[in-house]
Image (cartoon, rainbow, N blue to C red):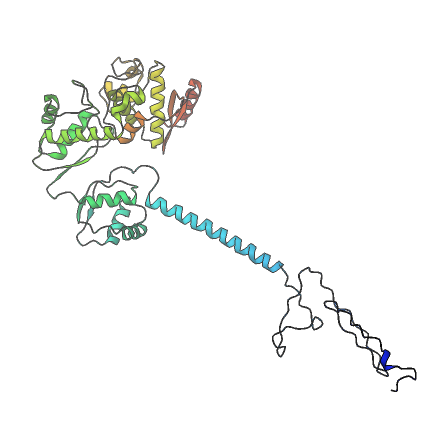
Amino acid sequence: MNPPDDFDPEHVPPVVRRPRRDGAQVRRPARVGAAPARPRVARRAVADPEPPREVGTAGSGGGGHEDDDYVVLPPSSNGARRLLAVGGTLVLVAGVLIGAVLIWASRQVDPPGEPGEVVAEVVIPEGSSTESIARILEEAEVISNARLFRYYVGWKDAGPWEAGTYIDFRRSSSFDQAIEVLDGGPVPPAATVVRIVEGRRLEDALREIAEQMETVTVEQLEEALASGAVTSRYRPADASWEGFLFPDTYQFSDDATAVDVLQTMASKMDSVLDELDYDKAETLQGRTAYELVTIASLIEKETGAPEEERGMISRTISNRLDAGETLGVDASVLYGLGRADGQLTRSDLDTDTPYNTRLHAGLPPTPIALPGRASLAAAISPTEGDWKYYVLVSNDPPRHFFTDSYQEFLDAKEDAQRRGVF
């Protein structure tokens, strides 16, 4: 193309290049005679404030792509939310299950409450493995889960243990208590085992000792107590020995004398009272140790119920003593009549003895039985409450109703009699 006739190359105006805005595209002038440009198609708008991610393509040199190639839509978040919800639920369920298993295991290892009664004898045969010992203890109801006990023994690195006869196991023991008995070893082959249960009267206990020992007589035992050869730090001088021989399982050599046997039981009672702070009895309860042992003997004879009721019975007795009222403990009335148990008649209740707590206010003159540890503990540490009456309302399991209302007591008593509880 030729320049116009008036074109002056000396006066050509300079070309000014405007800066291009970010993201702006350069429009090239259409060539003369070129085909008309195709209309531009508007890009799809994405209603998401987050800019699309750039994705490199093969042959792009790793530098990404131009905006006009394609648009990457963000993934939907609904699936992620569902996944998080399911995951959270699974974690929660797993936590509950693990917690339940841990609670169950802890109750197998250490059952709630105190151990039960002494198991008569547990014999561990020669060559017994830990597995067989665990099974023997489970069958004797000393522990509740042999397999878990076996794992626990391995974890504690306990054992091995001697074969022989064990006499100190109690039902529903913790694993550590069972291991402690096993560590103590069996009784010597020549030993004589003497077992006196809680709640025995002294005269019955002496007879049972003589029957089990076979080398001492009741007369020898009575003479040993009367002679002063047997001593107790908590029994006042000239007081009855009732209540001051600790009921437990003992082992004695065949040459043990009456004094040996009784002093062992009296010393064990002193040790238990020391552990329960009976030396501070007057400070803790405002009563002498002898009075508290007497209360413990009443508790022992009044209930075979769970231990929590022993503390409630202890409080009821204390409340009535503080009010100067009669205790009305039938077990004490029976003791005064020379009977260990049985039903009381109207004539029995009207019989005037120092132990008739329906007729005489205050404590009986002596303990009425040999109390165990649980009753001794309840006597010096009664449960807080304002009860003044209680009545047996169930035999299986033994359970009492406690109240501070005499009318409620009468109503509960009538209901229990109607149901044949007593």
